[in-house]
Length: 128
Length: 128
DNA sequence: GATAAGGGTTCCAGTGACTGGAAGGTCAAG
DNA sequence: CTTGACCTTCCAGTCACTGGAACCCTTATC
Image 1 (cartoon, chains in turn blue, cyan, purple, red):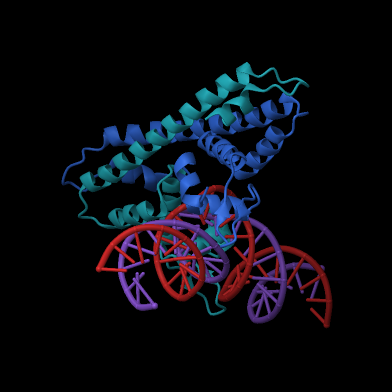
Image 2 (cartoon, rainbow over the protein chains, first blue to last red; image 1 turned 30 degrees about the vertical axis):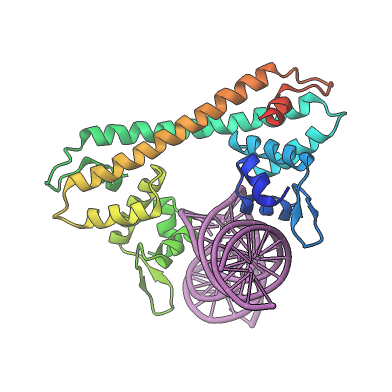
């Protein structure tokens, strides 16, 4: 497969696939013309990466997960541990964003949103 | 005030304050020795910026908000509109993260987390 | 055989919002 | 006079791509 074909199958942009090669996540073969040649194994790995990235895992987490994926003797505890840490980070991020949203929502409710200059949102930003 | 004093008062690191000057958010004076000199006006602006960044506004939003803050003839509707858009983005982000967290939480629950290689998390990543 | 469209390649620069570090000037205390 | 804590600028790195330029390869058509 050429890069655009595997890009279609995985949903990843060609640029991203080249980037993943550059950082050593995959190592496609090369044809006589210098084009990258992808096998089903590359397809699986890229799909794996795409899914892991969709779930918000960092590239370094993906690298580790991919190594575990390829290791038949892995312990599922290792995978679970990474996933748990990641979930914790996501939940922290959600809590932060929710706190922002609450504050912002309150300020928006308080703001008339008309032609006059008086604005509780700016007042809040200035007061703290 | 010198930079470390205003850094203490605003809670912003000196590096960040220099960066804000570089991108034109503030323009501190300069002493004869070349040191930055900050006034109360700069203090207010930096505090304003710090608060706005805490609420997750982008630098460009902050630039606009700061301009509105300084404009006595502003319409509060302009501020409210920016805040609303920002809130919408935050809520979208929360929804995305929550979806990730749900999926991940489910996978974690399904994973034994022991010494065996069988792992529903990796299975899921590979299947999609 | 020329040409044009549509692949592919590499390399460099930019994103956002800082942050770290090096190299060097300035200031106050002892 | 020296020490240590400031301050300055400038350059590079972060993360995960993304855009664009310049150039090569393949296939189809005239």
